[in-house]
Length: 365
Image (cartoon, rainbow, N blue to C red; front, top):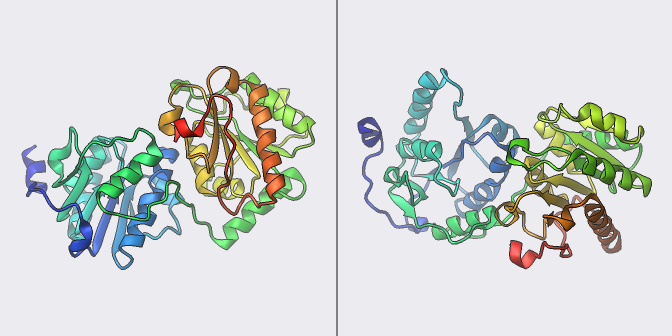
């Protein structure tokens, strides 16, 4: 603790209005390896770039954020070490690199009491070290009071607004190169045998240990139901779904493609061309929203209010009756019908949604 105190001196309070000072170098910190947690920080990247267009903005994240954040308005992305024993020599090296940059501002953008994020901000050597009040706030000299919002999307906006960072969007935007977009479209069209704009993607994953994965028989009923109605549907597997891949191949109609794309950027580029993405509360749920695709999100647990995307990006169904395969199929057909009636391309951005049973957007967002 003495060493950390020496590396993070001067914890006197500072003015939260950053526009009055000279902010030329900014460090954003969110070293979490989950796709969803990385995606949720995209509005912070865009917001700081809007508010400080000429500043150097760096990011400390994970290997997955390093891939996802290509083409984002960042100057450099550092990967925080995670595995033992490498952390013993990799963290000192990272700290030396960060301190050499002499940042004016470092921010833990987790909007939580992240020990690792707080540590990196605290020892970064930045003149202003910002984070949420809590267990680790002795490492900050700009302490943001506890937030009122519980929803992860709204919480980040409240946090940044408290720092007088303005023009913050609730949902960030993934950026793709022209080549990535073309390749994503080609891949999707090769799977569904034609135009991709009306294709529905169903990601069958979800953190099993957290109880977030929908029952396999529900996915089977949903996917076959879409296919029987003449809707082009593609089934996506993730790296944690090896245990259900064979079962899906047996129970789904043989003409329904099942794909596992190991590259997260290639997967995101494919998803960006879908007409609708159906998935459980998972990283791809947040990824689909950031890719500008309409999302139908299935929540198994009672944490929809905390993790649900805003209703202009996703429609949420959850709990007993509205979480059945039949109810989700009806919701999907309504979303597709709404898309057809507005004649709007699903890749141009989020569209307004209609409330679904037991998922009133005024409550969730």
